[in-house]
Length: 259
Length: 264
Ligand SMILES: Nc1ncnc2c1ncn2[C@@H]1O[C@H](COP(=O)(O)OP(=O)(O)OP(=O)(O)O)[C@@H](O)[C@H]1O
Ligand SMILES: [Mg+2]
Image (cartoon, rainbow over the protein chains, first blue to last red):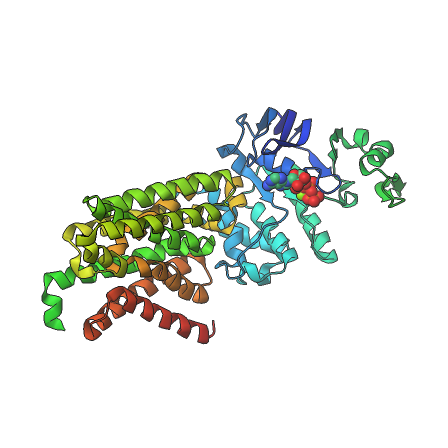
């Protein structure tokens, strides 16, 4: 049974269609990377998966839920958003924010179990922020906030991990740490991962599926089928090479002139 | 002083002011954290227009104020849902329109002008047992709501996108929040006055926010600061014979300036 099935889904805002006729499936063992130029609708796709946006047409199946929009099953998705704004005096510590990751699992009368508290500590260690746990969340740098939100998304653990540019604004060393945390969650929790990114290279050894989104066009499928030079060159409208070095593939933009 | 507090009318007034001092900051905390304070200011003025309309039509002013304010809050919520939170323009227009109506009906209700003014400046001594019971009931209902849904509310004020992703029906919570804000404004108006309702909604949470590391702390802190201001302000108003609402807001403002000078 697939975790996610999108069948000819079109979505957008107020009748403005952002992407059309997108079909893909996500299995339990999949690590899916979504990438493409700015503004093609990657974040919109993430919100459609979450149910924050209802598709204009097509059918969706997410964690057993075929309804459009928000549904109790979908809250089992651990989500790291791309951007969000926070009042600089917002009264919450990093630890408070990480704990909110388990709130959807609690009834109003339930207290936060010790297991979740331990989990929050563990996740903060995983993303390398344990010494910041009592710092007001709004006083952290944006890269640290991003890592904090990853620790939050790992609470539960979730049934799917959905990451919208998890390493954007994250420093070089922390990027390795974040990617390691994602891979560990993928392997240890045995959950599928969807990662939206502009740099697919760090994920090429682990990714099984890919969605390449372009303006009015997209390709979805197994990575060995889709990640081809002619497709990449078409989407980015410039010459893109898929190179192999010591058995590892990576993508290289040869010429940065669009045209 | 002690004899004064022996009088039932003073006791009722005192309780009404304390209840308003707890209710308004509680509702106000959420307006501060979601940057919607203008909503409380707007609703307070709309509520006053509701009072003037009530006197002009010789109906119970509290009921007309409640009707006008709750309907306005519901309407603003609908606009907010359709426009992704951009209801401020509509609120400005409603605010102005109802102020205009308020002025017109205020003029029409000549024999009741003094009574109508009591809603503007507050007259806790005029509080009836029913007024106090209503205020108490609404405060208890709102408190229960806040306690039960503290996590959802926290999630929402932190990020409505993450709250949606966490399966929270943000839209319904926002409606309840708009309605409770309307309720807190209307029911507190007689005790402290429509003109200072806004002050009690924003000042205590602002004081509390300066000292709070956690959300729960800020909520409890603003209620505490609100009650303290109400208590002190009420006693001062008895001594100096000045309007209670104004005295309460002055106390709260002094606390705010102290909180600004004291380091976190
Ligand atoms: N809330 C919104 N209302 C209306 N249009 C929107 C909204 N959010 C995004 N859009 C539009 O939808 C399109 C896709 O945006 P989206 O954020 O999904 O792109 P993206 O692929 O995530 O881009 P990036 O790489 O910059 O993150 C853009 O044209 C954008 O202007
Ligand atoms: Mg995006």
